[in-house]
Image (cartoon, rainbow, N blue to C red; front, top):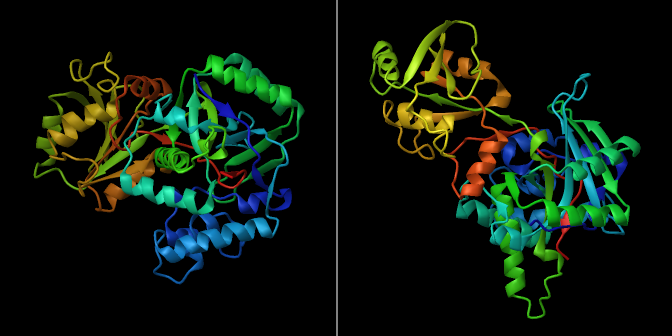
Length: 422
């Protein structure tokens, strides 16, 4: 079962919360972050991407950058921009991609600390591989700040009583923060849970009703936080298991509120084939139908759409090319990778091959069309998004998803609350 705990979060004052909350460190490059922070000294990007405050040419992994991280983080606390709660709390963080619409969909997550041992013992489950270099980069950030500056994004199998508790709070309590981010128009709301009995009940419900939690977004941050906790444990001869470093900050959403967005593919060439020969080769494993010049979006599982030479095509995978009883074999990205990218186009390794690129569904299928029409790419494939059930099935089976399979939106804003390891 899953261990969570409340914590004394560092939070921004209400008047600057919208300015301080930033997009995650890994969705912006240095120049984009520098531009986004122009005229805004409050942005947490000054802590998560501190190279923006150094002369051009500095990297996020330079020693000078790490020194600047600590300097800026301490300054945020010294200036009173981040203030620590006096009591341990849980929090609620809600997000919406369409906050101004009458039928806006909001997802409500509980902000809590997860137990590092649950990550080590695979009660916290992953569906992606992590790279040691990226783990170490995030570990350095945790070490030098002695904090989880950015949360990780977890999912859990929905529990009715947890939903009811959250619903009661958001209906009867005004959010502490409530804003629409100017960069993307996404809505963000944040509540504190102050009642000790409610906190205790939520902790108990996770311990008795939630058999596992699943990393949705933030595999490297999860690994880094858990591994730093293990380091501190091994280096503390008086370790008791109750120290703050044994836990790391998460936002945990019920699985039935989350929407996974498609993650699409664009390829530079047809591997020497003519258009006619390529479509003929597709016909061995797909029923291919020309849908004309209007954008066509896949409508169901085992259906892709393709954009080639100004036309959109519906590709329906033929029976026998997939296995709905296999958590990996059911995935449309696996079907496309095996039958098209590998067998026809000769792309063997999605992580390293320079002929392929990936486009998050948040950019829309028009972006696929643009990249092909520009001549940069030859063909594009739009995917039907994976489901939370598929993600959970894969994580439960101990398997790993193919690269670039899941895309979650909205991304969590960083800076609404920070967990220190002291």
